[in-house]
Image 1: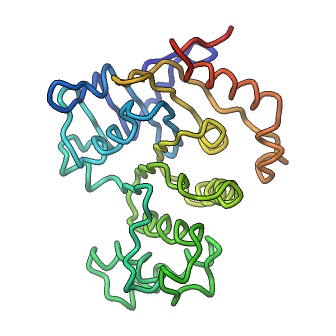
Image 2: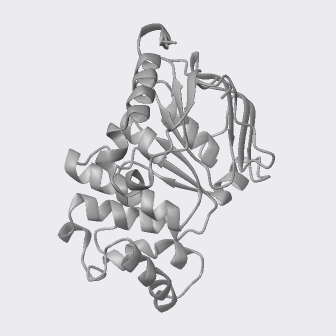
Length: 271
């Protein structure tokens, strides 16, 4: 999305994992997205923030191949048609969509089962992830027996186990309370450090965007256009494991203020 960051430059990696050029989309006469240009490097985490209705979730669906754009091009690691893109992307909506009749480990292993693995093989592949994401001991629990945060961990584990190189996360923590949400933000950051993927994250929370992402892009009111792009502050070594330290650091606070101004009327960003 050719919005400039604080340094006036636009990221343009040599071998992008995702490239969106001149994208436009709408429904009937309503234009939802307009003039979208976006480049994600391999293993880069980019967050989209913007007002409700500006097309953030629609952009994820288009990249994932769940819909076809009105105009422009989308390339995901060489895949350009919707069906090809769907094979390269793992899409995680806000709702966890766990199947209530399956145990937690079988929900997480569902992608492996759909890929042809036996139940035993799929569980064996999911087990190490349960230990890594802090769910050891809850493998046999039904979704109704898990807290909201634990359900989201199962859903994200299922997303990772697809093995797809691009993860599209649509407000995965929006329905959680503030304490659980902060805990899962730290957890997700650690998981992505251990299991690097190219990630496009949609969120309404500027602080969450800056904490989790390498870059943050602010979209305007509908039709969604990029009005600001900035690099997330690089935290101190202590801040990488201490969320409170990271989000209260002066550079973080200053960048958050610039992003919030971009979200305001007219998208004005102070110098």
